Length: 219
Image (cartoon, rainbow, N blue to C red):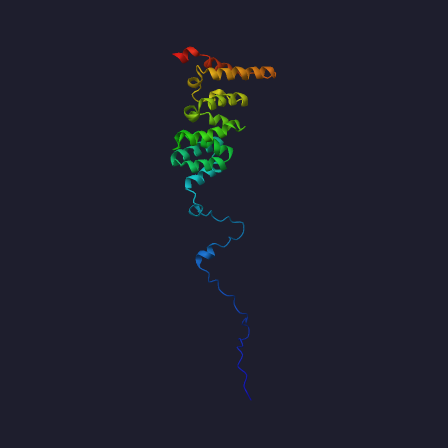
């Protein structure tokens, strides 16, 4: 008669349940598991994976970490002036940026390695906007140096139309003085406002006086 194989009988009082398998995953895999409770995991530095330089990440985060809009704007401009990104990076920041980020790009234009055509394209885009803060930034020193005469005259009218103070227009006295075409456009603008029973901006009279200063232009 065959003898059945002996059963592995545990001594009395000993748990016969099979212990769970040990987690043999490598330490780095275990570290990737979610933290318990409401703990927030540390931010991962995925700069290399995203191909985004550190200064650009700081540019995007400035609005959250700086003490107010003015501080954030100053930080963004400083980052751009220090990094001196190429035209493609500048265009990307402008095209995909918020209004505040676009304004910082416009303010930093004189310090960036762009051709006049590349920078003027951004200025002209901002001048088509209805955001007065963008318009004010667009008529800064870069526009004074590079914006063609026809576009610059329309920028002055844009400021008057949107009530952006002409004090924001860099180089106003130099570019407006003796500009007969600008004078004609200002007179027409004032006539249209008057006909529509709308007030003529006080700034218009100042720039019109400059534009009519033909003696200064001829000198």
